[in-house]
Image (cartoon, rainbow, N blue to C red; front, side, top):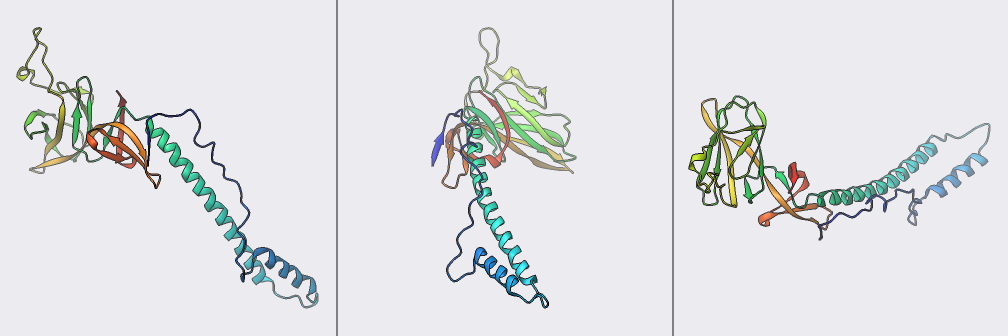
Length: 250
């Protein structure tokens, strides 16, 4: 397994070329394409012109040889292309180091001073009375914010430990509960891990909405099978197929 922390300037695709290769040699005891052509030509040369033999089987077999050879060459080309795409994907993923990505189904996010945490939720059609709850690492609810009417589908929000923006609009936060500095400016919640959940009323029942939260990318690893793994803060990791949103580089 190798780690990537920087992106080089070279194009990862330059090292790969999809050239036609000579077809593999036939195993002994099996009729190769060249031998088959020699036999076919010999039969055509020596046959009675007044009673030509049926050559349909020869033609069908020749077509089969061509098809197999083409598939073999194509398969090798696809293997090279797949490897090139993996290398390109790894280099692209390395550009995420230091940034934040939203991971499907992850409900926790780490807050750092001066940074934002990002989240999305899939709002069920017909859901109302939506409330966003934020819990600290001890399970205590430190924020419970009414979101007001929201359309179904994806809801996006971001939080800096103090202010909450939901779908581009500022949420109504009770700032009176925060301690303030000498100028009256409120202090945000302390750094740490926070869990986010959104509850809503659906057909008379209180139902949790699917939430996905962001994490900072610390490094990128390439596994033995060429899978690209993102190593996240707090020892977590994920793969690119689980990243639902790329937020920004801090």
